[in-house]
Image 1 (cartoon, one colour):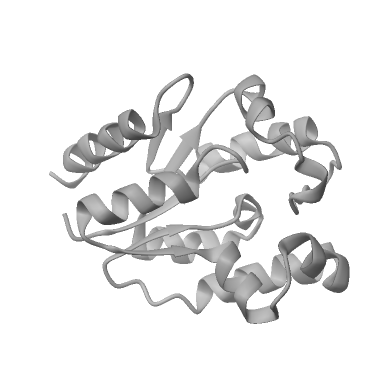
Image 2 (cartoon, helix red, strand yellow; image 1 turned 120 degrees about the horizontal axis):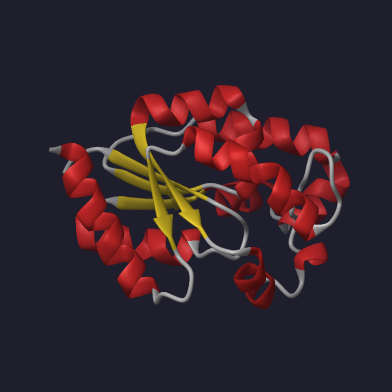
Length: 169
């Protein structure tokens, strides 16, 4: 299994946690795209979004993704990367895109501070609205969809590896 992996899904679904587990199990490098952006600006995501504005942040997120060197990589981008058709096509050309899908109810229990987390919607300013507007986009770009409802990170990681083995053969 040599293909790169991109994990997409809503904030709170566990992209970074699962990405780190997968990178260890599959002996790949791990990149959290939000962390790359925060390190570059020495600010938190909400501070960067407040400083640049929503549209400029989305452009920055796209540019950062397009600069990625896909070489034996597991990447967890921010949930809003899905708004960039250009970035998502780049991801699909270089990686298997895995959608980590969970219910709104489960996500709401994990993301209690969504207002201060830097979650961007194009047409909505509520977590539920952002969730609803992104679902079709996540599904559209996914090569593999993994149901995360009421499952441990370990179970989800094992399921991803099993699905990747099927996908690759």
